Image (cartoon, rainbow, N blue to C red; front, side, top):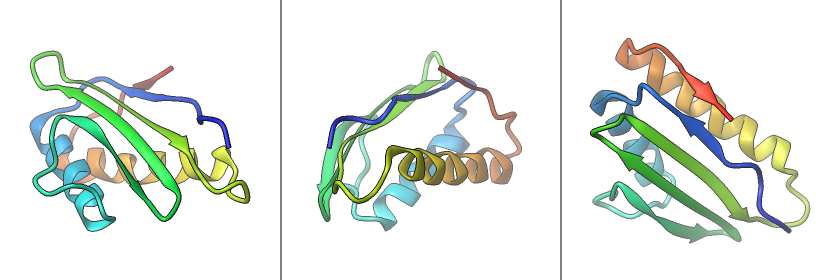
Length: 96
């Protein structure tokens, strides 16, 4: 499958990033979770980057099983990241 649309975020505070990092680790991501990189698990490949000084982050699924549509992948990512914003008290600020 081709890559899904990249999700971009601003106002990614250290608390938001810590939450996102823990979610990624819990789902097979590298531990410790670096500010940029990629990992593959069960046919899904994700790439991400986070710049703590600008509080900008992006995440993208670059490969996945053909049966799972990008809409489902990005919806799941967005829902999890929304939860990190909410649990940290930061304002969600997604942009494309």
